[in-house]
Image (cartoon, rainbow, N blue to C red; front, side, top):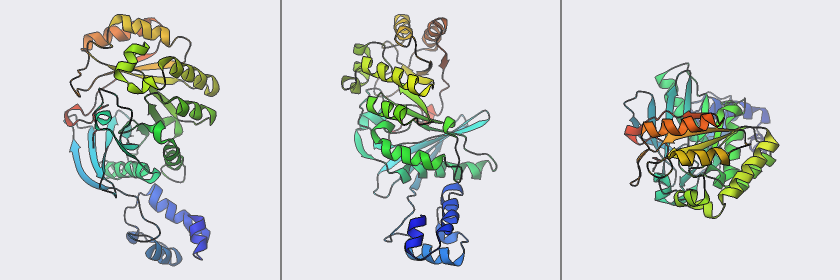
Length: 334
């Protein structure tokens, strides 16, 4: 921003006001912002449709509220007409936004609605950021004074497949001059893109890592997660061990409980052995129904959790949110 302003003969310090308007205040229309005259002239001349710069803000097409009163799903239309879904979730003491990183997904997980729709394109960093700003505007309208505390990249797409744009967006979203979401409150979810995990470790990125596992043997996992054929389970676990050794950070392993597929006690025993020696926390998520697969019964989930806890693995049976409006994990389809 400073370079663009300076090239147009506007003093670079005006970039602070422009950054604040876009990134902290979430302005969706810069013509309504009270800028000082030099910056006002530059915005009028240079920002807008058909001009050098534009606000990468999607159009809010639809909004659905869950009967739980705490979950809202947004359908957003991008500049090229593609649509994505973003979810705002309220919990005790915190507000979390779940954002998409791609239109569709190339990973093809058989129980995931996004995976079933296939891959269309990556999102730009601006399109990732714009989802957070959209959720923030809605939150402020509903509950003035409340702020977005948590950000999870668990919407449509595989974040590590679009890692450059994801990291660019997170650098901006965590910047204290903007929204200032704390890096420890940001979680990146991956289905197991090994090069991306190793890159996050090598660059010492401060965000939390969540790895979707779903199978404790190569055969179990490959049947549910086709990408396991490219990065086998053994290679993924090695990458996770390397990540832990380099960063010293705990890894959250996501386990979708699918009735009759991966919810048996014997599977829980194998999972405990697989993660032995890793600083891990297992999140058990009863499958949200998609594509003919069904979530495990609560009794099976509690039995699975008990085995992991007795093996010394921290384990949480996750709350389900927004199931009635297809806003839960694996249900987003644009």
